[in-house]
Each structure stands twice: as structure tokens, then as C-alpha cells.
Length: 306
Image 1 (cartoon, rainbow, N blue to C red):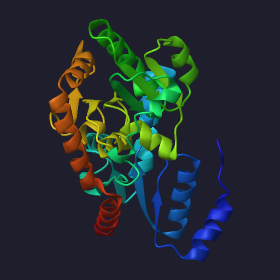
Image 2: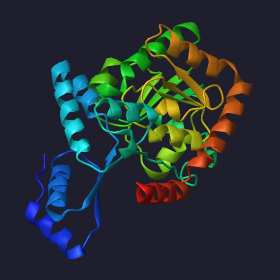
Image 3: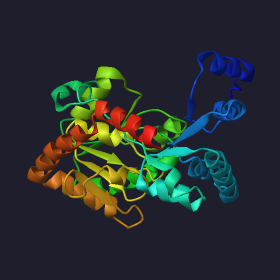
């Protein structure tokens, strides 16, 4: 953990004559920014984009630590005049922590429609990973416990018992990469590690459907990237990603606690090619409403009104 040079921060704020400070992390740098803002009497706005209480609880299996983290987050964001929040679900959470509704402002998100596009589809891309030509489910993100990946693996293996021939591709790295890659050595579960730039664009465009089982994401930009790439997506009904999906139009929102729900949704997207194509087209169309230019304009306008 890095501790920022507080005196340098004070000198920088004074020299540049800032009018307000926007804090994007509740860690040491965020605390330093909050203290500096108080000293100079500046307006403070914050961005709530990580569900740290649930992350801490997942990593430690300690409910008390999760509650302590929630208390800290409530205090930290309670010191701000405005808090940008990524989804309605987390707006409700912040209100439950005692932050007034009038301080909460929707945070727009965007996606590059040039970087993520069906135009990157390359039939030979997956050969380097020894992936066959069958149906490809894609996950992109951190390979860590809070992403609920083991529930996805279980659902996929149940699907394979019923209808073999698909591949589940996991793109990303994280603290549980080695553990999970060794724990699921099946040939049809492929761990690529981290992919960047054009390789990531081709990974999205070269898949058939996107799966994102996380219950703790405040938004889930990877879901937007998948939709921009022309993929229908299956997400959980908890957290922010469900608010990106038009259920039944651009993908499906499933209850992860309902036995067989993930397997049924994956089987449905595999079986119905015509519905999958309609969803792919609708997903790309929906992603166009999240262009980064539009998102930035909304952010600036909402920030000025707050």
C-alpha cells in the first residue's frame, strides 16, 4: 500500500488553484485528497465504483470485516457534497448507509465502438489456444473469488453433460488464476491469461456469447464491451451488470441462486441461433447509446448541476 506525499499534494492543489476535487478511490490517496480539500475549503465529489465491503467479505470470509468496511465507506462518502454512483442497486446501498438521495448522481459509462466491434471477428484467432470450432462462451475480467467464477464453471460442466461441444474461455488474470486453472483442467475450459489491445478485441468478436456471473460489480464495463462486439450476454440479477442488459433482448438476467438457472440460460443461447443473432444485433445497437463522448458530456453536465 502506497502512502501519498501529503505536503506535495497540498502544494500542487494551491499552485494549480483547483475549484473542486473529484475522488475516485477510498484508499490512502483518497483520504489525502479529502483532507487537503477540507484544508482549502474546496468542493469534494466522489465516485463509488468498487463494492469493497463485499470484496473484503469474499476474501476473508469474515462478515464482521465486511461490516467494518461498510462503516468506513459510509463515513468516507458521507463527507462529500456529491457522489457519482454507477447503478440503481448501489444508489440504494449508499442511501441505506445514510447518504442523502439528493447527493447521489448517476455516473455514465461508455465503450469504444471502434475498439470493440464485430468487425474484429477472426475465425483463426482461437487456434493459438487450441480451441475447436464449436460454440464459445466468453468471460472477461479478474480471475478472483468475488467474481463468482466457480458457480459459472459448475453450470458449464452441467451443460457439457447434457450437450457437449462448447468451450468456456476465461480471459483475464488475478489472485486465483493458478488455483482455478489447475482446479479445472478440462480441455473445454480455457484460461488465456490477460489479453490486451487488438487481441482482446478479437477475443470478444470471436466468441458466441458472453457470461458474467459476478455479484459484486457496481457496473461491469466488460458487459458493454461484449455488447459492442455483438455478443448476447448472460449476467446475474445482483449488482450493476443487470442494469446494462435488456432482458430477453440483448441477453438474459438470471438468478444465480436458482438451481440450474445458469445452465438453462447457456443452453438456451446455444440452441436458438436465430434468437442469438437477433440479440447480437440488438446488443450492438444498445451499445451505441453508451458512446464515450456522450458519457463524458453527461458526466460534465451532471457534475455541474450537482
